[in-house]
Image 1 (cartoon, rainbow, N blue to C red):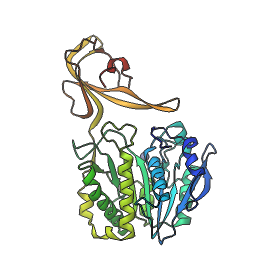
Image 2: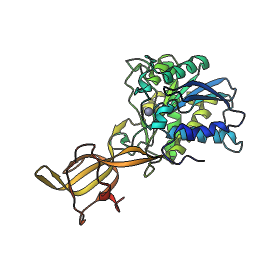
Image 3: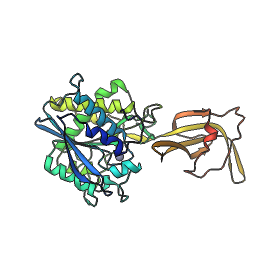
Image 4: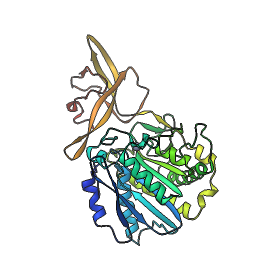
Length: 361
Ligand SMILES: [Zn+2]
């Protein structure tokens, strides 16, 4: 069991929970809209408490895989991750219905990360109750981000991104927020050694209905983790290692209060995420649009993730075309000299014929 696929429904992940070593205390903490159980796992008995949850967006499975890797590491005394001095409370797959259907939203089509104030959904209430009962010293909000993000304008692909969410509309650096920034600065410092230039920072516009902003506002240092794209790693099995490294670093600096030696400016130096990437850039294609024909065009293609059976299919879809496309791409295909008929007539978001790509990627 290693969860290589991007699709990770609860029926697959819950087998991990059935065989947890006894140092993990498992409890069912609520039900989803479709009556699926939501689980909490507690480990450690240290003074500093960290609450973390994954897959509140059901199609963001990478950080649940990271939780699996973390459980393995903590089960094996030969591995390096230590939680001495910490108590972890982990909620994997806060949105099990979304994880099953591979949707961002829950079964009532609500974005759980826009429901922190409203608490209109059972999953949001479960998280809030754990937050109130467990009284964490830190919250880790574990997500996955799309392939479109660069770390800084026209930078490298943002493989991991962070945010210390704002606690007010002025984005003040409150003491809780400062501590989140310091932990992020420490993680960034470490990750730069393995993925230089591939760490991004999300924009901190305040939205009280976002869970991270809400917890930050309640005075708890909260960190958004985003597992992003690493070259050719669409199933995110390389990225997951870097996110696990980041968690290990966070545990270490929090246990030893090392993060307090980092500054807000070190956090602010992490480049902001920009939406500068598409998945594929096709060069020298001919585009037919109505009666007009455009030669030697560039065409941007973006993958749409579709659940097909029990696998995620990365369906190429049309993004845009032009003489020159001002976007970076994870892959470039040059069709110059190709004998293939290259006459397209696409609407944005329309599927691009897979046949065209056969042999090219
Ligand atoms: Zn998300």
